[in-house]
Structure formats: C-alpha cells, structure tokens
Length: 576
Image (cartoon, rainbow, N blue to C red; front, side, top):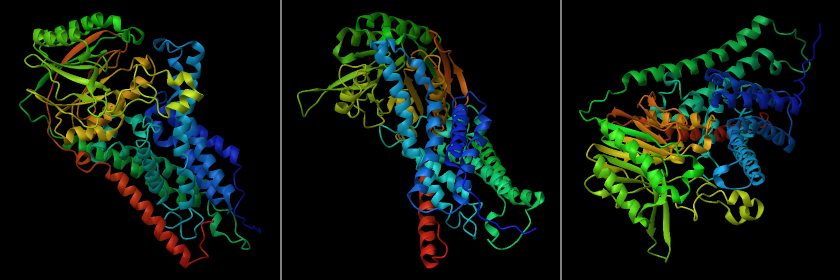
C-alpha cells in the first residue's frame, strides 16, 4: 500500500493545554500531600509529552509558535501553583487582622490568584526555551525532528534553574519546589547533602521527562524518517517498543540513581561523634493570632511561655526555644518585660531563645530601626544585646508592603495586612549565638525556605539550627506540612539537627538525615525535651553551594552556543 508521510498535524493548542493543566494539578496535589508522593515522579510526563508533540508535529515559524509554547507552559504552571497555594482559601475571614469580611475575601483571592500568577508568569518561559532547544543538537536526533535521550536531562536542568530564580525577588517565593513533595521520604532525598534540594527536583523532572520521551517514541514513531514521497508501511508494535525502551530505561536509571546515591549518603553520614549533647526544650504556646497581637495581653503570654519553659527546665533542658514573635512587642522598649525575661532565665536556670521585636537607633537619621528578632537570654548575663538575630527574609504584605504606593492605590486591603505599626527591616547576617553548649544558628519562619541562609549559618559556625516560626495563619491546612518539609530539607543540606518551635504547631526536632524525632500536634499547648548533638561536619552542599545550578546553566549556554554555530554552518538544519 502506498503511504505518503506528512509530518502530521500539530495537536490543537487548547486540548494540549488541558493536558498540561491536568499534569500541573496532579503534580501540585503530590506537593500538597493529597496524592501519594511517588506519583510526582510521573506526573510531569503529560506536560513534557505535549511539548514534544507540539515541537515535532510540524514546522511553524513566527510569533504564533512562541505564544503557543508559552501558553502551554502557563497551562501547566498556573494550575500547579494554584493547587500548591490552595490553602490561602482557608485563611478566610482573616479574623486576626481585624479587617472586614469583604476585604478579607479580596485579600485571600488576590493572594492566592496573584501569587500563583506571579510564579507561573516566570516559570512558563521554561516551555519556549526547551522547545527551541528540542530542534538543536544534541537534544534533537540527527534528523532534527525527534528528541534524543539528552532531552530529559536538559529539561531537568532548565526546571531547576527556574526553581532557583524563585529565590531572587520578593515576588518569587520558593515554596513549591518539586523536592517538597518528597521531604517525608528520607530514603529519596539524601542527595540534598551533596547538591541541595535542587538535585531532588532535577531527578523528579528528569524522570518525568524521560517517561514522556518513552511515550512519545511509542505513540509517534518514526515520523521524521519517512520522506514525503517514499512509500512505507506503518511501524510494527515491536519496533515501537524498541524505540521507546531506551527512554524508559533512562527514566528508570535516573530514578534508581537517585535512590542509590541517597542510600550511600545515608550510610556514609557521620554519627554524632561529639561527647557534647544538649537537652533542648521546645515550647508551643498555642496562642491564637487574634489574641497574640493585643499588647494588653503581654503578661498573659509571658506567663504561658514562662510556665512551659519552667516545665522544660524541670525535665533537664539546657536551652529552651520559643516561637517567632512569641512576645510580639519591642522588648527593649518595655522595661518590665525586659526584666521579667531575665528573671525567668535566671529562675529556671536555662538559656532562652525568645522570638520578639527589637528596636535600634538609626545613627544616620532621627528614627528607629525595627526588627523581627531572636533574642538570647542567659541566667548569668541576661539579654545578650550585642548578638541578636534579625530575620533576613521578610514576608511580603505580612511584615512590609512591596510597591507600597501602587498597592495602597489599587488593593488597599492588602496594604493593611502588615501586623506591625511600621514595616520591619531585614537582617544582614547569620548572627550565630554562642552558648556554653555549642553554637546555635537561628532562622525565623520565612527564612527556612531559602536554602542559602541555613548554609550561611553553618559556614559561620552554627552546630545546630533553631527555627522559630508562627504558622498560626495556616491553621489546619497543608501549608503546615509544606513548611515543615522545608526544614527537613535544610537539615539534610547542612547535616545539622533542626529545632523548630511554632506558635500553634507544628513544633519538632529533625535529625540531620531528615527524620522527625519528636513533634507536637497542631493546635495544642505543649512542650517536649530532647537530647541533640552539636555537629561541625561539612556537607558538599555547604562547601560548594548551588553548584548544580551553575553546572546546569553552563551546560545549557554551551549547548545553545555550539548548536547555533552548527546551525550557521549548516543552514539546511534549521530549528524554525
């Protein structure tokens, strides 16, 4: 039978975008722990499959092609982030802010839809870049019209570069990295000690892309190898299996390599060799946000945290960690509170790390500098004023208003969310606390989702990392687990015990291998005491930082440069 092969009709953009959206929702559900985490290793495949089909179905020039590929990217990422950030809906009616229900609805919708839109608008550029690369060697096969086995690693490299870009501005919040979905499977995430959480995202994206390649080779076989005039029968089923087998093996290889390397890192991890141990007390005051920010209640709040501290001290705690803004007042502006904290530390005989605010004089202007802080209080020296940790990554609209004049004009309720009278300022260094028991590095809430901050603390000598946070806004939502997951990754990356105190939960202690050793329930007033060991080990990640991002960017730049040179020398081989 005579058969004329034409490249094939490009799939319609809207059905393709629906497939991409389904892929985004499924991936988002795994990062939200609604679907089993193992599904994350395959949920990217439909999106990448559509990129393959759209690229190779037929040649098309011009802006329309770029617009369509951008739309495919947006169709995946916007539903992905909408799914991850769906917990914003549960924040309504924002009673603790004192705003009306109407304004609360506006704030919740703008936060959910707007943050997801900002994230997706950046991430969607993965699609046109990858599609362009799919027409170039070595990502394309020699014919230039079918993807080679190099395509999945290049897709994974692009994906983690865009994950890293989310750390660079206030609008890019790295809350929804792929690695978060695997945080509670310690056997799969130990590679973070080598190359950070990006290595896990790389493995997930690479595996999904390889599965997509296997499916593409099976469903769309040999379209590019048949000329428009040669007559050839349809490929046999066995031929399709053989073409897709190598891509399937690649997917399995990436997945198993991650498990193998993770297992080796786990086995080679050094034990707690130090003779020193610290008995740490973690307290959870469980003070509702609406009550917490009422200045009249400070004596009651101090009493709650003080009683829990004394109970932890009675069980042998050496240090006690309080949550972020456990006392949301300027301690050094309240002499009575200042003195009470020093007396509490002296009476209980423990070092207390207190979450509160601190105000300093601005030497350049006749104003005050205000900070969200962790303050060390000792039995002998009281409050250590010359080494206070200031939160380094502030929460947009929670602690300051970006683009303030614009927001106040366009969305006034959003500008009114800041819980402090004046915006607080970010800290500039790790301010590691020196104690008789070891060096304690601090992070406050939002800090813990930025991997470079914990790594900086370790480089500055931190032997244990303490995270104080206030997750009461997330009450009962998946955001609680997503935030804890960030701390799990920080523990593995730095090879440090993580101490985590949250106002209403989840408070916990995490081992250097990412195991949660002890934890409270959300919504309970509680404390616990646990022994941990200071560690002075160095992981490859803390030594080299995000070298995997540098390597990925270098590989893509070199490939694009070499391919473009080749293209100029051989004009017949054109990507568009």
